[in-house]
Image 1 (cartoon, rainbow, N blue to C red):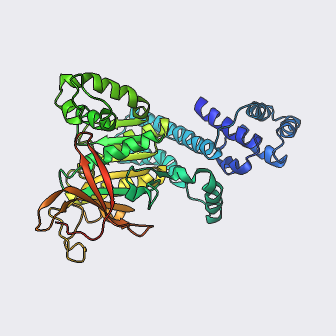
Image 2 (cartoon, rainbow, N blue to C red; image 1 turned 90 degrees about the vertical axis):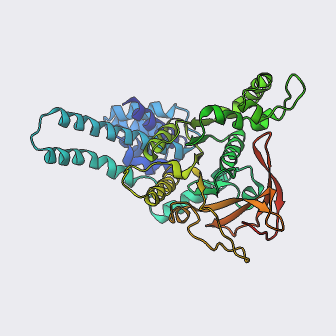
Image 3 (cartoon, rainbow, N blue to C red; image 1 turned 30 degrees about the vertical axis):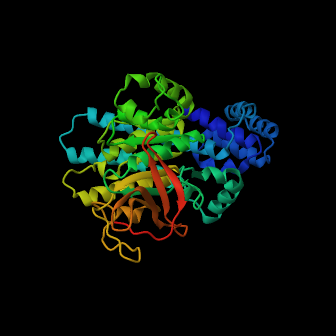
Length: 430
């Protein structure tokens, strides 16, 4: 398979360039590539000496493979080359399993149970190999990799959220972690997700947005909200998201200009706007996109709209399974996952600012337990219980950091963006 051969050449190229850390991929290499890697290690990274030694042993195919690799420009990161080889190996294993399954299904069988057992036996090697890769390593190797990457890509391990209360204290959305943005219906969770998605892609990261509620035509103006604010209509009036949603003909020129200005960032954002997709459909589409182009942050709007595989399951179990699946996805693919979640209505707070009702997340007690960070968005109250025009963003759970003080926000309706006013002291929430 050509993809597998290219991946092996990249790993060998990294070794020829002096990065013998890729020796951990030796078990993933095929016969000739494995011989070439072993000889290169024996020759302490001297590609010329290794080629000569392979030819002396009459291993001409391995020698030719190593010679080609030594003239190849290696990938920027050796870990990326190893990951690509792992992926290529996984594809090859599943391809072989699929061939076996097709042969079994094509053959007539009067014993479906035996056929099922044969199919399970064909799939088992691929499943086992998939479970055995990644961070199933010695602790020493994990620590070594962590230290090697610490100074190189430490800043890339967090994705900017665009919210000072998150970015200044935690650094942003963290890879391998599940974050929940919770709030009541209509509070602005979608706007907050859109805002953080655009912040990430403007910073050069790649984002994937699952819109379970809004169709694409309603999502696009919100994505361009900040850009629209830079323009005015031909009659001199302000360009706003609401006017674009209303299909105001005066907004066409401003919309075209906003699109042209934000085009580079939008090209880094993939949107799944099929609506009400199942958990399996959403995850499968994301994994396929991530394998092809690489994704830094996955945003899901929203948790309760991801339907579970079994329709007879309770809603609490479905939402818990969705949260657990997103957490596993974050860890397995090293991406930051940010999902909106509805709160139980109404959320009750005591005088000491402790929640007095449970569960916090609607239809699931387990969702918040699976998350590494939970933030809640509420309307701010004035004295007397009247709602003000402001909002409070409160970090209610943080696995690694002490929760910062609540932040006061205002909502810019023209751009569909939250603007932060800074931290605030204790407030009365309702």
